[in-house]
Length: 148
Image (cartoon, rainbow, N blue to C red):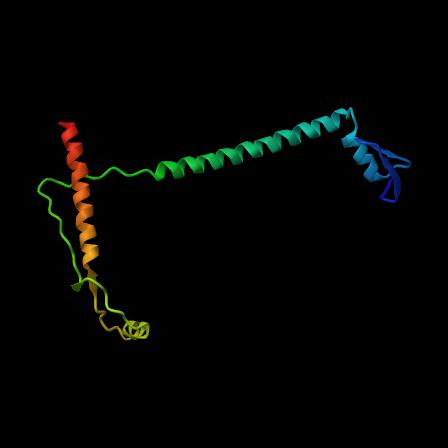
């Protein structure tokens, strides 16, 4: 036994047995009876349709996002360079193996006063660019051989 809305009730497994009725118990019995009336069945069916439509739309959106992410994560086809193309490297500053450590306060003061920065380019970055261009040319030459 428990007290609910100042009414003494007994819960016998699946429905409420009330000794006196209150508005809460009337609504409880209306929606929890074994054979609900037509109004309650219509409300339940409308709610079922709304809830399942929501689930369907959210699942479609989720799987759409997953498919877009999977499709966009694939490798892009290499763009073949035009005939007679050359690799041009724009190396700014001096070519070094390791950059010099700089003081952050010096960099901030150069930025504030508009002084030019000392630029350095790592040899590893240049080699990486050359290898990437070579790889691109290998892929495009393989594709060109297959087309012939």
